[in-house]
Length: 309
Ligand code: DON
Image (cartoon, rainbow, N blue to C red; front, side, top):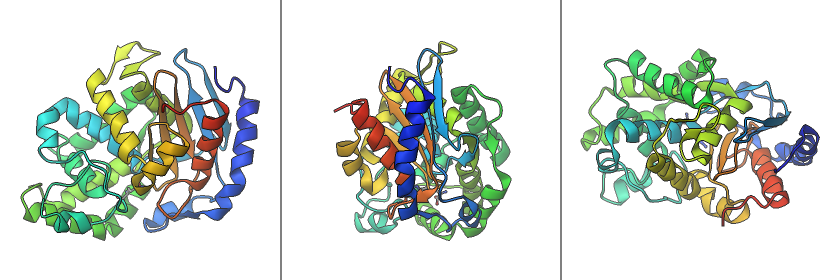
C-alpha cells in the first residue's frame, strides 16, 4: 500500500510546502484572494476505507474547475454521450482555460472540450431542472453521493463574488448563444456555473470523489455503482488530456495520474484501481494549477511509482 502512515505524508507535504512561495493565490474572483498562500494539504483514500491525510486538512476548498469533471459525469448520465458530444468536443486546446480565441478562429462554434470554460459552460447549460435551485440541487446531491457526505454545499460568498466578476465567462456565453450552442439566459447560466464552482468540501471528501473515478464509478464503501463504467472512463480520459489545462502534457509525463485542478488550488487525483487523492494548496503557478500541489503529486508519484504510463 502506498503511504501507510500520516507521518510519511507529513514529510512529503513539508518537502513540497516551500514551493508555495513561488506561486500566487487567484484573486480575479475576489473571495478566493483571501486564501492563505502557504496552506498545503493532502488526503489519500484507499478502496478498503482507510484514509491518510496531512497538512492543513480541515481547510475547505471550493471546487472551481474540479467541478467540471463532475458536471460532465452528471450530464453524460442524464443526457447520454451522443447528445453531449454533439455540443462539446473531445480535443485538448493548448490554450489557457478562459481563452475565447479558438471558438472564433476555428470557424466551429462548439467548444473544443468540457474542461475549458467555454466547454464547461455548455455542460452546465445541459444540467436538467426547472429552476436554478433545482439544477444546483441536482448537482449538489450527486456530489454528496460521490463524497458520501451530506455536509457538501456551495459557498454563498464565493458564488456571489464570481457572479459579480465573471465578465469573460459572460462573453463566452454570449458568443455561444449567438451561435445557437446554448439558449438560456446568460446571467441565469452564470449564476448556476458560479454556484457549481463554489461547491465546497475538505480534501478528504475530495479524495473520496477521486476514489470513485479511480474505481470505475463504484463507491468502495457503499458498493454502489454511482457512475456507469463508461462515463467514469470518459471522465478519467479528459482528466489526462485536459485536466491540468495547457500543462496537461507535462503533467502526464512527470506525474501520470488522471487529475483535475481548480483555481482555488484544489487538485483531485484518481489513480486507476488504487487510490483517490485530494489536495489543497491555493498558491498557483502561471497556468492556474496549485504549485505546491503539483510538487507534492510529483514527489508522491515518484516515491510510489503511481504513473499509469
Ligand atoms: O470559470 C472560472 O473562472 C472559475 N470559476 C473556474 C476556473 C478554474 O478553476 C480554472 N482552473 N484552473
